[in-house]
Amino acid sequence: MPSKGKAVGSLVKWGVKYGVKYGPHVVVLAQQAKEPAMKAAQTALDRQKARRRAIEHAATVREGTVLKTFDPRADHSEPVWVVFSADDPIAAHPTSTTPLAELIANSDLATRVRPADLPTPADRIKQLPRKARRAR
Image 1 (cartoon, rainbow, N blue to C red):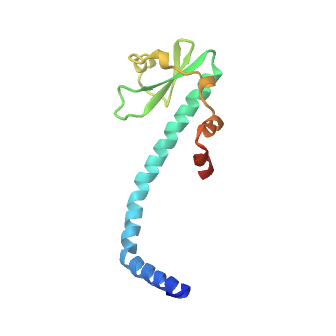
Image 2 (image 1 turned 180 degrees about the horizontal axis):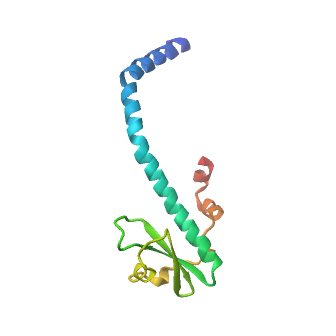
Image 3 (image 1 turned 180 degrees about the vertical axis):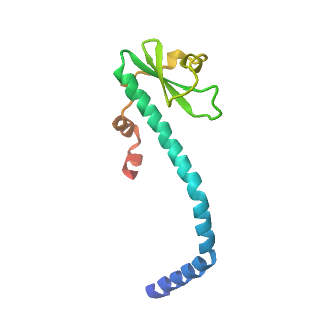
C-alpha cells in the first residue's frame, strides 16, 4: 500500500502534467464563457429587480395589485409586471414603450396578486424541506 506522501506526490505530478497540457485551453474557455455568464446573471438580477419594484409599488397605492404579463411588441420573452390601483393600470416594471392598455389586452385580470398575499422570503425558506434548508 503506497504511503500518504507517495500518493500526494503522484497526485501533484498528475496535476502538473495535465495542468501544463490543458491549462491554456481552460484559460481560453474561461475567458470566452465569462461574458455570456455575466450577461445571464445580470438578466436574472434585472428580472428579480423588476418584480420586486412592482410589488413595492403596488404596496404603496390604494388597492394595489400586480399582474405578470409579456410585452407583445418586444422581441424578448422577459416578463413585464403591470401595477394596478383598483382596476386601473398605472405602471409597468420594467418600463415599456408599449401602452399599458395593450400590455393587458389579452391578459386574465383575475390572476392579479396583492402584495400582501405574496410570501415573504422568510416564508419561502420555511416552505423548503428541512434537508434543503440545512444545505444553505
